[in-house]
Length: 340
Image (tube, rainbow, N blue to C red; front, side):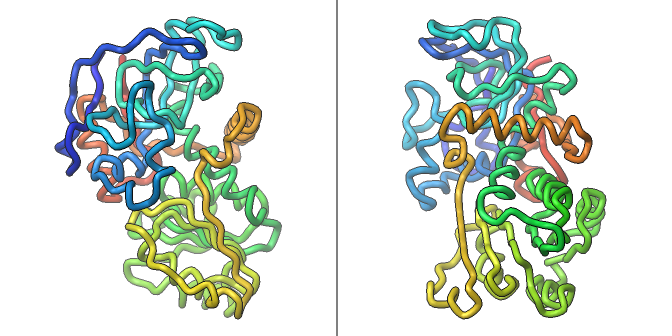
C-alpha cells in the first residue's frame, strides 16, 4: 500500500509518499481500506517535531502497533474513514464490508490501516467517506468543549477563536443551537463571511482589531461568559481580559504556539476559571466515544450541524494539503482522498 511518511522533521516537503507493508490485524484489531483522511493542526505540529514541548501525553496518544513516540519515521493523520477488509480475533461488533470512521489512532495518511476496533464509529450510509473523515475529531472535540466545562445557555456570550476553521465552524453552530450569542475571531473578510454563515452574531478581524477591546465594546463592557481557544500564544493571555465576571476560558490547542505563562493570582479578581483538555481525555470508554459520536451525527442528520469541507486533495498531494492548512488560508476541513 502507499502511505505518507515523515522521515525527518521540517516543512511540508518532508512528507514523502512511500510503499509500506501492513501487518495482519491482531486480536481486537481490524484492517481498513481507507477512502479518506482528515487533516488536523496536530499533524503539522508532529511534522515540525514540536509536540514534545507540549508534554508527553501529546506524544503517546494514537500510536500504531510497534511505533514509539520518539522515533521516526511515522505515518501522520488521526481522522479516517473507509471499509473494513479483515478483522482479527475477538471482533463481534464489526465485519468485512462495514463502513466505518475513526479518530485517535495515528496513520490515516495511507491507503489502509490496522486499527483497534474500540476506536471505530459506524459510518451511516447517507454520509460520504469524505464527511466520515471530517466529523470524528473535530465534531467530538466540539461536543466536549461545549458540554463539559460551561454549557452555554440562552443569552450567554461565547467567544470562539479561529471561528472559520473546521473546528471553529462546528463550535459556532453548536453554541448557536443552544441559544448563545456568538462572537468569532478570524483573520480575513472571507473567513468572516464563513463564520457569519455558520451563525456567528459578530465577527472580529483580529488582524486589524484588538479582540479584547472589540469584545468589550460589543458586550457593553461585560465580556464573554465562555471563551474557546485553539490558537494559543497570541490569544490566551488576552482571553483573561476579554472574559466576563465569572467567565470561563477553555484551551484545547496551540496552533499559533504555546501560550505564555500566567500568574494564578490574576484569576481571582473577576473569578475567572480556566480548563484544558484533549478529546482523548473525554473518550476514555467505548460508551463515551459512541455517545459523543452519536450526538454529532444526530446534529448532522437534523440539519443544524453542517460539515464544511474546504478542499479535497489526492494522497500524493499531502504536502500541498498541509501547506494550505498551515498557512491558514482554509475555511473548514481539508481532506485527503486516500483511494479511489
